[in-house]
Image (cartoon, rainbow, N blue to C red; front, top):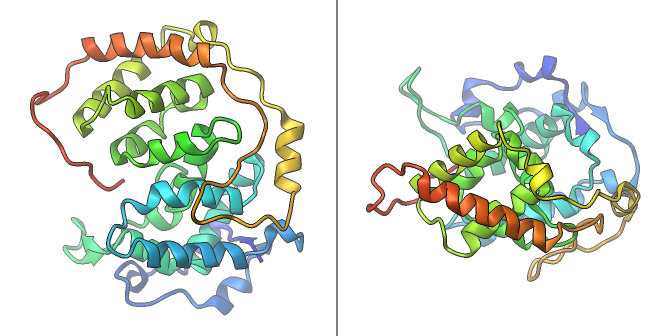
Length: 284
């Protein structure tokens, strides 16, 4: 069953031993203070735990690549409303109780500047939505899916620079902008980490003066369809193909194309440090 672990209880379990990957928090202690979401079937955790284990086995030699595979399936398995997903306690619970092994697997301990010891960044357990191990993937899937189509999520999460930079920006909240940015990746217009960073900065800066909503209308989201999808239980999450997301409306293609033309122009004018050099993606 899924629960919410209050932030006031987090410090008791976010120990140096945990951050060093030497131990896990005691389950009984967390269960004693957690607030259970409900006994509704959509709040059961068995399938989610199985999905996490499959991820670690399937991508044992390619942890970074697991993001693109796990994000859409995490979203489809963990059926939350946006209001529920805004509760940091749920992500605390997933990281500290349901799957601390995943957090340590995806972000293995490294030298910390403060202590010179191998540690996981604590924000991977209890950080903001764009940093915390599970929240970052769920919100990436929610913001970058195109209605029921999770393919844009795969593309977005397949680029660690885009995932690490763009997800935290307000421009990600505009559905047409999110799809246009993803298409720039899919069409090979941007490649390297430096190009992605330059693009994100240029688009974000333009977004402070240009109303993307006026340039590219986005069909209103069907809240009822989303809620029906959330409440649908007993749905098997496929491993060999993408699941289907909420059928709450897709972005009009003409809106995406309109923003693509604008963003290509912004990118051509944006300064890209070391433009002739190829970069490797860094882990988000």
